[in-house]
Length: 288
Length: 288
Image (cartoon, rainbow over all chains, first blue to last red; front, side, top):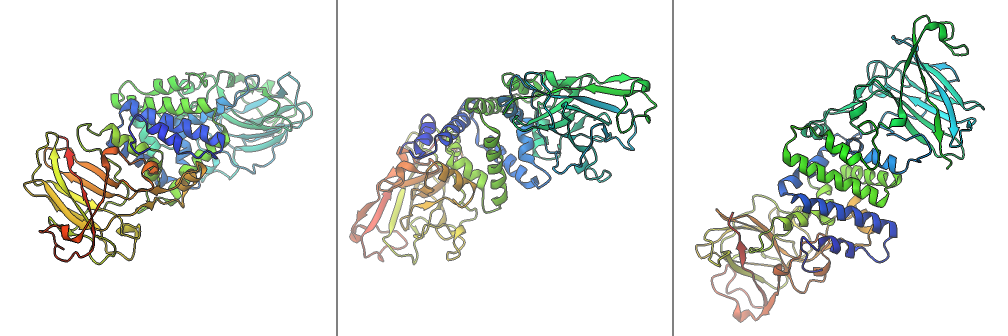
C-alpha cells in the first residue's frame, strides 16, 4: 500500500503478514496491533506521549536484572498477569493467582506437620487442609511448594538477614491428600516502586501494597498445576491489591485458638504455650 | 474490589486510579489498559504467549544502546510511529513521515546550490523546490535539514568509511523560499533485523526493507516543524515500506536530463558532463 493513512494503516499491517504466517501468530499479532492502533487513535496519542512511552520501556530496560523483572512488574500492576491467570483458571477448581517474582526452586523438604516458624517471634500460624479433585476426592502424594514473607515483610531473596530458603518449604502430601505445617502469619508488603513502574503507580495515585498471603504451587500427576495465594480476611489491602491477585475463594479467616487446642502430630506439638492462629484451606485441582 | 474476575479487572484497574489523577493520564492509561486487556481476552492469551511477550521486551532491553533503539524500531515496524505522525499531520500541508534513527544534530551548513555528492560515483541528483505556506506563498529563511544514505545503503553514523556528516546538510533557504542542492540518488536499505524486532518480522513473513528517500526536517518561525521523506516513484519497496512511511504526496519522479540542461548557479555548474537526475519537490508548511 503506497498511500498509508491513519485509517488504513492497521489493515496495511495485517496485509504485510505473509500468507505463510502461522495462523496463531497472525491472530495474536493482528489483534495486538489492532488494539495498539485503536488506542493511539482513541486518545489521539501525541508525539510527547509516544516519547514518554518509549522512555518508560527504556527505563525498564535500564533497571532490568536477573533479580529485578521490571517488565513482569509492569504486566502485574497493569493487571495483565492476573488477567492471563484468570483466562486459564478452571471454574470448578481453586482460583489461581499470580506467581510473582519471589518463588525459588529447590526449597528444602518439609515433612507433614513440619515447622517454618523456627526462632521468629509472634503467634504460631497452623495451616492445614486437603488437596482434592473436582469431585471432592483426596489426591494422594501431591507436591505442595510453599513460600511467604518473614515478619519483616521481606522474602528470603530480598533479605540478607534470612537464610536462602527461609519461609520456603516443599511438602509431599500423604495418601489422604492432607497437608499441615506451622509458620508465622505473613505480612503485607510493597512491590518495588523505585523504578519506572513506581512512576506509573504514582502518576495514577496508586500505592504499591500487596495484601499478606501464603503462596502455594500444587502439582499432582494427571492434574493441572495450580499457583495460588491464601489471603487473611482482615488484611487492609484485600480490596486494593496492586497486582489484582485477590479472589473470593482465596480469602480465609485466621482463627485464634487457645494453646490447649494445638493438635498432636506436629513438629512443635507440646511446645506451644500461647494462643495460636489456625487456617484451614482445601485446594481443588482440575484434571489436566 | 476483593473478587477480581477476567470480566471486571479492567474496571478495577480504572477504579484504582485516584480521584486526583491528572485527567489526561486517566484517559491515556484507561484506554491503554482497556485495549491491553481486550487484546488478551480476544485472543485468550496463554501463559506461554505472555512469556514470549515478556521475553521480547527483555530481548529489546538486552540490545538497547545509545546507538541502537530497539523499542523505537518495534514501534516503527508495528506502525505505531507512523500512526502518531499521521494523527498530527495537517491535511493542508505536506505529509509528515517517520524521523527514524539516523538524523544527527550539528550537520554542516550547505549553501543554496551546494553539493553533497562530492567524490561519490553515479549520476548527479539535483533536488530543488520552494518552501511554501498553505496559501502557496514562499516562506523566507526557512531551515532545511537534509540527510540520506550513501550509495552503499548506509547512513554516515553506520559506516566507518564515511565522514561524520557525509550526506548531511543544513540549508537556510532565501527570501524566495527556494532550495536547491546536488547529491547522489539515495538507495533502499534494511532496518536492523538481527534483534528481537527482526524476529517479529521473520515470524510475520516480512522483509526489513525501506524504500530509498531524501529525508528533510523543515523549520520556520510561526510554522509547524515538518519531518518528511521524498520517495522516487520507481522504488521496489514503495508499496511495502517496513515502517509504513510512504504517502502519495511524497512520491516523486526523478527525471533524467541531458548534461546541457544542468542549471547555472549551482556549486558544480560547469562540471556536469553526464546525464543527471532532477527532482522538484515543494514543501508546504502549516502555521503553528
